Length: 213
Image (cartoon, rainbow, N blue to C red; front, side, top):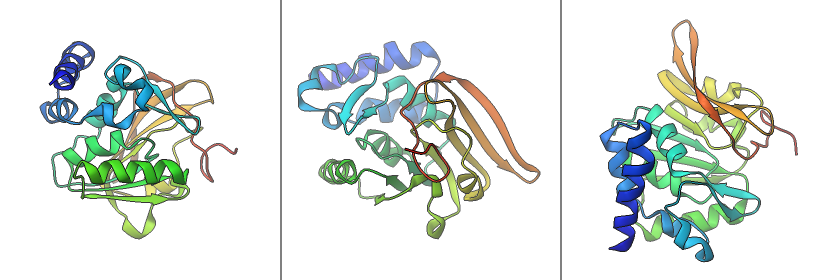
């Protein structure tokens, strides 16, 4: 019960107060047990307004950033979604609440294995996890209605744009290694449109079409 109260407080004070409006996103954020996706020693901070370390030099994003990125994908329920950077699996679970099928790629195997276990325990069976270079996307399952990248990239990875369906949305942090702008890219007949959703800071997106190690 205390966790449900903490989630409701998080949604009211961190999300609604900052302009997150999509009722489906807000409901998902109220439902998914974020405390299951953080280190045991940090459970008491699970619903606080900041990112947390999850090991392997990676983080679970701030709740507001998860909600902002998810809302920008405009999910209605029938979509096939690609996530780049499974991490803890928390964002994956939020997406699984909102879309039909989620594919998620993680470069660090131990993180993928741990995320798979938690997602299975919570009953998210519309999720397929892969280990590999997320900057290449997942060509064999394309096109995707929405793609979300949970790490900062030097540019919009072209393979991900290519794997969007017409009208598909891609949300990706773009910038240098220390600060990025959250970009929403939409595939249209003429090419793509880009919208800057504001400043952010993510761990680096490593891979062929991201940063080199």
